[in-house]
Image (cartoon, rainbow, N blue to C red; front, side, top):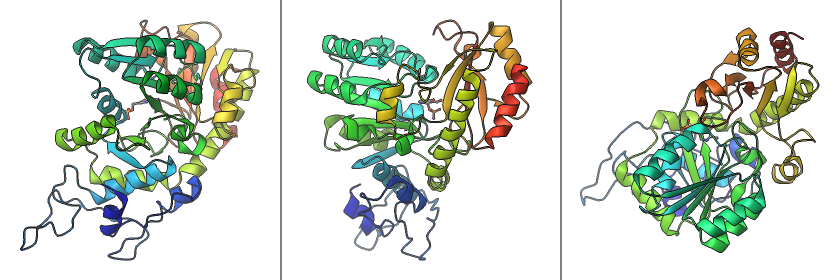
Amino acid sequence: MDRPARAAAGLILAGRDKERIETLAARAGGFIDAASGGVVPPIQPSTTFVRDEAYEPLVEANVYGRDDSDIVRIGETLIASMERADAALLFPSGMAATAAVMRTVPNGGAIVAQSGIYWGTTKWLREFCQRRAIDLTEVDAGDAQTFAATIEKARPQVALVETPSNPWLKIVDIEAAAKACGAAGSLLVVDSTAATPVLSRPLELGADIVMHSATKSLNGHSDVLAGVLATKDTGSPAWQAIATDRHDAGAILGAFEAWLLVRGIRTLALRVERASDNAMAVALHLASHPRIEQVLYPGLPDHEGHDLAARQMNSRFGSLLSFLVKGGRDEALGVCGRFSGIHRATSLGGVESLAEHRHTVEGDVTGVPENLVRLSVGIEHVDDLIEDLDRALGG
Ligand SMILES: Cc1ncc(COP(=O)(O)O)c(C=O)c1O
């Protein structure tokens, strides 16, 4: 749905694209509910919408709830503004958003994906590509030259990178990746879940589509599953196919989830700032801890992607980090077992800190070390986090 049509629905005050991310988020994109004057959007759970005597929809935008939802449009408009995109599409999970892009690749086509990214994405991609006879190449996109050479050779329809990557915290040079993809006629998709639009805006660096698991920092409260895609090029065949498929095949977000997501986004900037500052302090503390072999965090000056992250990530480095415990599996699981405040749980980007032993989840197939613990740092008092870590590490 285009902007004038959205405005006609009486729900969005358009023209906010020049506002800063913090302002857009706090004000839900300048939202005012035309019907009540409320500064908080209503939830409309109706799955169907009436027509008038001439059989025209009473509200032009709304016919049937499978793809017509004001609160979903409010969320999409807000995220599009924050990403400096022309449009966004919400999905019921991050994986549903990724799958929607990949389904634009024809049988027998080609996909290039960064290696060592979120295992759920890699696992799904491998099976999907096998089923569809799609040539999948996995490459270390943290190395810009290797990535460019791979794109030139494979000439994929779609290339997917994830920066910072989960759980390796590799940083991809989005501008360089976009140049390589542009020259090969490939669509560059950036999973920017760990960066958020507060820290990085891939479309401004040349990416074709930015993707988020909105389950993570965008929502931020570990109570919504959602995914989103955003683009500047709504006329591209790929975007048209994605939008049509979402409408026809029905991978849509429910009204209540969309409402919670919009509510969560209103504090996005504050949460990202606090969690990133906590993560930086935790990373520095762990880096000098005698029980730690290595800390993977792009904020640390000795991280291989630090300079690039400092340029590409708006002066903070996100809430995600991994650390390798001296010893092996037992030592890493022992540390996890001794956390008293940090939850042992999967996922990331919530207000509460979460620790995960990734090898338990990924097994031997991905090469994730048995002594790696991934930490999603929350917005608690940083001293409580450091005390919990010290206790767990026995230091
Ligand atoms: C970087 C990244 N991308 C995508 C996903 C998938 O998102 P969802 O769980 O919302 O389907 C995850 C989930 O952990 C993730 O960490």
